[in-house]
Length: 102
Image (cartoon, rainbow, N blue to C red; front, side):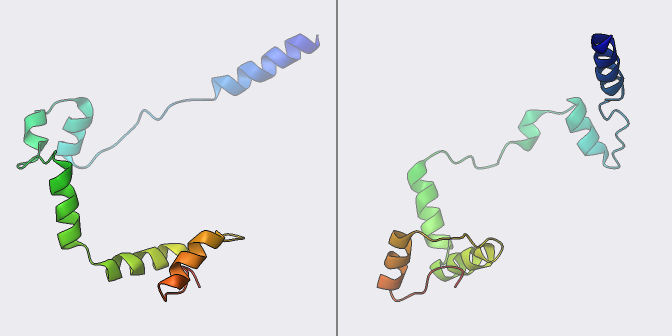
């Protein structure tokens, strides 16, 4: 009898599980992409980059270390760990900067 109750409980719980099938998209282009009605060449980059040296050089030329630091400080404000790595603190203090999140 316990097995019957267990079966009915599990079956009634599984019967209520449904995937979302009533998806409404207001953007017809997004709907066509989801349905697979598109040409992948339309979404290919005009200038594909696969050379790691070019990517590294572009990052070095276009990213400011000060802006990266400010972004990391903003991100660190969301999460303050219980303890910090001593090695990481030492490296930051060695350069004359306080550790992130302080």
